[in-house]
Length: 77
Ligand SMILES: [Zn+2]
Image (cartoon, rainbow, N blue to C red; front, side, top):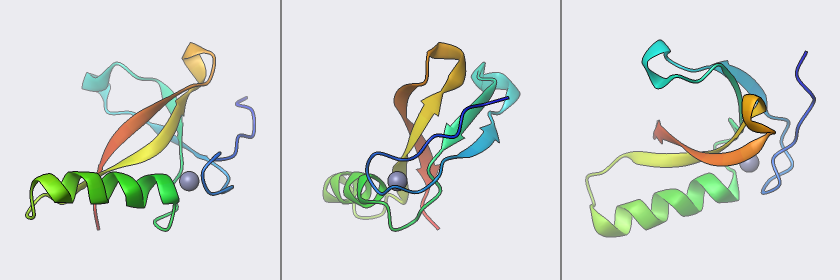
């Protein structure tokens, strides 16, 4: 069982997500809040570089690696 974890940027409960097989990840925890400060700021950064880019980074943690945080690249919807 995974711990209940909360996003340090917006306080939203992180949802579990199974990474694509080719990523090598197992189950990870992701902040799915579209209003998350972390996500919105990442979009701003990327968009400054390329207007057409629709990628952002979501806050994520890897339970297999001591719940270390990393940036999960995500399509902006
Ligand atoms: Zn968040």
